[in-house]
Amino acid sequence: MLWIKSLHIITMVTWMAGIFYLPRLFVYHVQALSQVDTVGDARFKIMERKLFWGIMTPGAILTIVFGCWLWFGYGITGKWLMWKLVFVLFLIAFHVWCLVQMRAFADGCNVRSERYFRVANELPVFALFAIVILVVVKPF
Image (cartoon, rainbow, N blue to C red):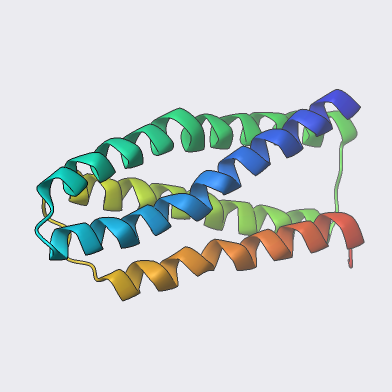
């Protein structure tokens, strides 16, 4: 099970890297659009798509698969785990939100501001802190 736990952590780091970076790309994409930079716009669409489908989504799927494997293998129960799952569900929802935003940029109909994406970029940090503390400390 230690191999599965290692793979769970590795894929979680991969997923979180994408979760942190994609909204930052959205910030830069908005800046490119405000400068009517068509080359930048095209470049950001490619970068966003490759990050989402090539790194974030496989990382998310594998994190969930290995997490379920651990859950069934260890039979872990407790309030800490239930709260961890709440934060994981938030990250999954954030992942879907990123897809919606990426499609808006791809379709040329983004209406969100640079500030909006800067604030959104910080939200997953709270989930990561909560998850790590819950898993390591197991406060309840």
